Image (cartoon, rainbow, N blue to C red):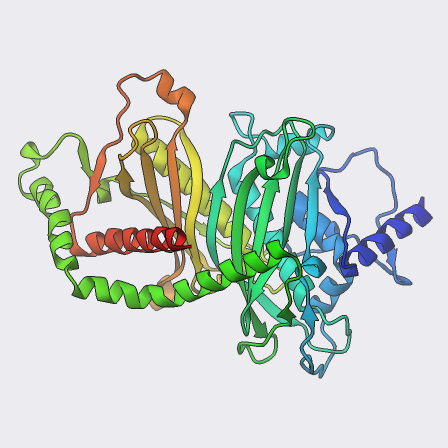
Length: 456
């Protein structure tokens, strides 16, 4: 039994360093109480505890599977060699070398299925967001690894999420696969694209079975100085990889242009749009009896959660795991959309996520959400745009800083609308100039992205 366990662990180490990795299986984190297998594993000649037993880390079925696979690199990140020097020479890698696949055996693993099931017999999106962040982190480590145990490992953190789009419902009864790789790199940033694949028909085309797509941006920091650090170069090989590289480079340029474009818009006539947005809000504030019954003030759609960040929620660098923050933000956004619409919401996409500052163990985190605006162009599929802002609050210093901003889009579930013939999404109006500017900035970012997409 011990020899078999050792062999499996060695296979995982080889898989992480291989340019053509096999699929990493995801298994339940709930152990069988009658399992008496040895809790120690031997890797490369030395004995260590399985990663699931390592304290002070955020554990989920996917993080356990990924960390076991990259355990040797993971141990080096936790305990880097003293006086280790930075990587002296950058390598050129291909997307294939960082490509990683994970498989959820929902059809055969009952416990795993129950860990991911939501009330509508679909996969819990919040847990899936955690897994996507964990997998993107693994891919960034894989791309930046130089296979030299004497060099100082890089500190890799999630900088932002460009877009996460749900293309079809994800069943919890059918096996699920996530595939991802690095598709573009800058000097110190890495664009990682992930695809969630679930086929309901045998032999169906892969493009038809993509249920969700996501793009994560990671940045590299020197683990000793904290300054931006260069990452290995990327050389796309296939036509598809070259196309993805070009598209990611265009998105990078777009992100750099956004702040400039916003300033120009404010200078070139945005004052009129600002006034138009505020006009109806003033009626709510000054003459509430005459306000439009099909509208509601933005401030009346708000919800809030607070928590103290615990050691069990931290990542390998000692900071709170970004996937955990995304999960909490999604759950609050879902609740906000539910309370606003009066019907069960259906998730469509993550518009954008910014990780502005790290969240540490012991931080007092306040997560605030609101319906930022609604869209009624398609009466059959009205859109609810939710903004979630996380604040790190320090009462003893009387300070509060924004750590993360999240933007989600929902609509109402079709089956919920079918049972409510009088269903109608209300219009959201701002009461203050600050609220109006937030709406315009996000609308402007959306229109800029759509126009860029059309120009391609």
